[in-house]
Length: 310
Image (cartoon, rainbow, N blue to C red):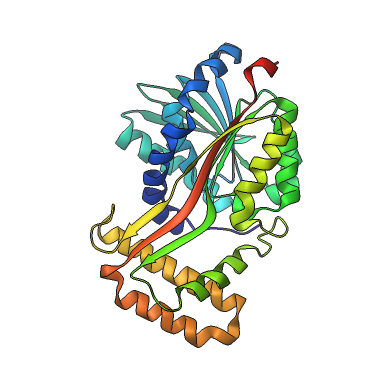
């Protein structure tokens, strides 16, 4: 399974947050929380977060999921899991006016978050989801969720996840899956070729089998509809601007990271075009102050029909 650094996750989080803020109202998540609370044991809503990284998905969703929550966070990377307690503690103190306690036991670390609007317990699990998805129980789970994950997985892996969710009537919310739209301004003559190579690279095996890339959301929505789910979706695009972006100088840092990432992936896909790709990246960097980049993503929420609830 492919890995990501904490530096990259930290760099992208403000852009993820801005994108999800646009998508969240369209998904109507808040409308379902009360029904989950009514069905939950002791009113505690149960969540499973797949590919949790440093806990950004928890930080994005927890304020919307009711006063009492329990989360199980799964990732294959021990270094990312080790970063979760500090990242959640900083976020809780700085943005939620709350506090965090961390316990260490035989089952691993357990995090207790107490905020004025909600409380949550978080259990961390180091699991290779590419090989051991079946070890993640969804029994009694109200919502299985993930961010920037589904475009990395294969159709077979996705089918297995949908089958597990269907068996337990578990809602699914997945954010920030790429949909193939990438728009640069101003346009460079090689943008289209670079994009083609990068898209091809996205379909390489990322540890789960042949990756779905931009086909992930259409594939999972078809599977969920066939399984009987009701689905809402919304665009959740990144937008970066060299001068007046959401992060100012931070936008340029994100743009530089993406230019290098796209260039490196495209060279890996087509080594014979390395010179062209290096020149493209150099031109992009020289013009970064005037650059704007939109990267298309999609979020979706799938719920089991109320008349079919158990």
